[in-house]
Image (cartoon, rainbow, N blue to C red; front, side, top):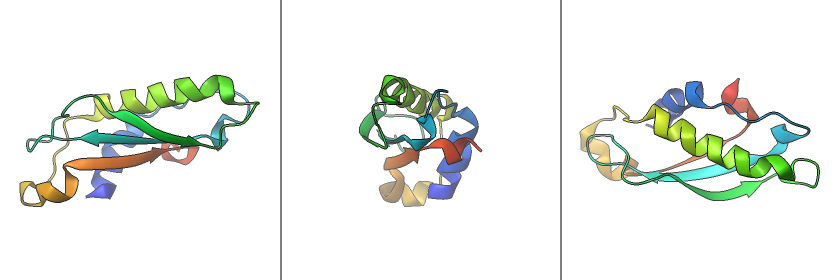
Length: 98
């Protein structure tokens, strides 16, 4: 299930550019309705890898991650496993865009 979500989100993910931005990891959490649509707005749970050099891009990194989830929705996931995928957490980093 997690792989299916990552495959759907990855093409929508466009990390910002800038010095050392590849070190930032933004963790996004979102809830899904049983039909795979978003239930509310995805939220930034945490960020790591932020330093003085890339701090200016951290906010944009989070915004782009939220946008990627919004563009990827709805998700086509097996209804019988809804309890397992109704709340999803995804880490957005430079590698996800490759």
